[in-house]
Amino acid sequence: MKAYQPKNLRELEEVLRNSALNAEILAGGTDFIIAERRSGRQPEELIYVGGVAEMKEWKAAENGMFIGACCTMSQIEQSPVLAGPFAAVAEAAAGVGSVQIRNRGTIGGNIAHASPAADLAAPLMCFDSEAVVLRGGELARIPVERLITGSEKTLLKKKDVILGFWLPACPENTVSHYYKLGSRRQVSISRFGVAIALRLEEETAVQARIAIGAIGEKALRMRGMERALTGRKPDRETGRLLGRMLEEHIRGTSGRRYKAWASAGVMEDALAVFR
Image 1: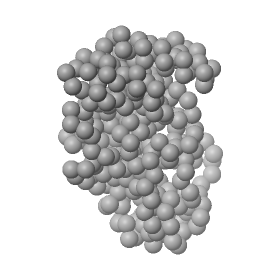
Image 2: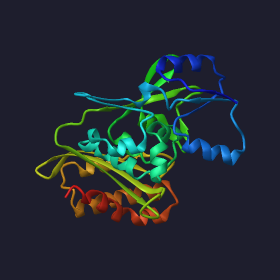
Image 3: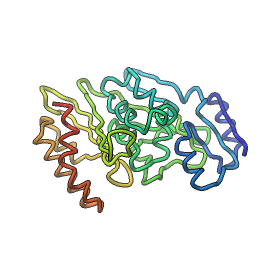
């Protein structure tokens, strides 16, 4: 097996030009190792992008923020830059797997693998984030909401590489939260992953964004729930209203009745942090 370890964007572009079409690309490798052991097959060529300097960068600006695709969950969890309006991203990263997984797993891999329970998908969608993708030597920006098309399915082509994610700046007075419900408190796969970003004025949501993961083949923006929350306080009554809407959605799209029954409690709990 041939292995490549580019150190910067220029080297990465050169490797991609000269490597085989079916070359495997990995960063943290947490998903790759499991898949390889299950299949018993090794790729002919492996491109490790975890050393590409530009993919480990953070760039904060007045109009938004760039998070490199090779930033690990631990780095995202502990970042002071994400302590403000983008807190839901850090909270989602904090709930991924074990400490060992968070130390290796990357935000780019979490999205590229496109598990229905991927924790970072919902908050990135909630913030209208775009994936910055290197494709054929050119840069493409694809909204994360469009990039993930289904369970372990994306718009990524062979030898496409996610370089990072662009998060547009949030309006003033925006607060966010990520609520995860799993089968246990720690090291758990999401049964619900609720990302909420609210712009609050006098305890009332004047703008609301909601995305929910693990209720279907991919995380979804819940725009009907966003409209229902706008103009209301994030109290228990609103939580019950959103819970009924989520229950109706799950019953109409999935056979997971236990998730429908849990919806009211999930949305009440997800909004509790804003009260």
